[in-house]
Amino acid sequence: MRNPELTFAVVDHIVATSPGRNDSTNPAGRPFIEAWRKNCADFGITNFDLDDSRQGIVHVIAPELGIDLPGCTLVCGDSHTSSNGAVGALAWGIGASEVEHVLATQTVVQHKPKRMRILFTGRLTPGVSAKDIILHAIGKLGTAAGRGHVVEYGGPAIAALAMDGRLTVCNMSIEMGARAGLIAPDDVTFDYLAHTEFAPKGPTWDAAVKQWRTLSSDDGAVFEREEEIDCSALKPQITWGTSPQDVIAVDESIPNPAREADAARKTAMERALSYIGLAPGAPLIGTKIDYAFIGSCTNGRLADLEAAARIARGRKVAPGVRALVVPGSMQIRRAAEHAGLDRIFIDAGFEWHSAGCSMCVAANGEIVAPGKRCISTSNRNFENRQGPGSRTHLASPESVVAAAVTGAIADVRTLLG
Image 1 (cartoon, rainbow, N blue to C red):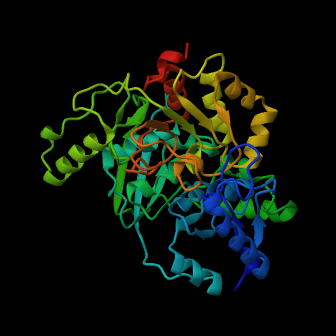
Image 2: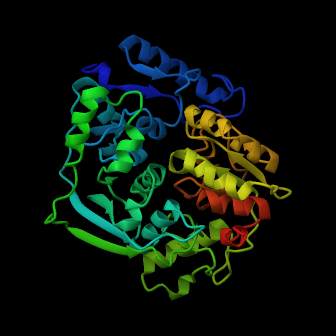
């Protein structure tokens, strides 16, 4: 390895998150865990193992530990590495052969991307969150809008987001087709990183912040593509099909493919509706669910759990619904327990898990049964994503809780009081 000191490893996709989990809880993952652990020891890689208090989903722990910092370049063998751009880094996912090249040389060859900027104006209303912002943007612009680009997110609505929300937005840059997404660092960024484990300390920190404040686009910066989205009237968003682009406001009716002029899009919509088991023109509200999942690198952070707990407090998961809360890291899990969030979820009938990818990726024994319907805070609703034959609706943590406690897709704003 060229630079072991710049390399970090964590296990997340293939580990079970059930309470008391160990290497063998997900038997299919054990050989991978053992090989990974040996490789880390052989090459001197910092390893956040299952029993490490810092273990969690890679794109959650990188910013929360200060591994990811403004102005750095960061790569990982997972597409949602783009999450890390929320601190002002250039972060993107790479393939296995590129991972090997980076480990050996600390370099990677890339084509220079084009520049795209999306400005989000207005102010979010109660019940609407960062997840709704990015789902709406993907629905409006399409899953190919960012192809070949790095997307910069800006505007008043982005500036008003806490870091957890910014991480959510950058996370789903990939679902827009972009190579990466980023947000210029500001005081929100610096406050978030100030006391993280791997961030600079003392005078070095002060010097770093001074330099980081320069990392914003010039006033005259030119972008190949610019978009503006007004968030003032934005409503909670829910997907209806098998692409993140298949998204509407929760109180809208499911689109009719017959009204789609583009033949390829029409065919994709028809296939999606057939797979998901919904009819054109029907309302999403009232669609019965079987599973509710809160977690993933998109929405497994503390602010996500806090928002979900506010809706869950004093309510009960509907009969027949299995509901899971899976914190994005063990640090987040401890912070949530310190705040009493675990008791709110458990009292409401949610399962309280350890950190990992869980139902987002279905590579760890935690899956949605065939033909069953799940409302999820994850980032992909592809066919079979959460298990063979599973049906997935993407939504915010608040909307997932609203569905869990009513037993069907619901408008969370009706539960806000």
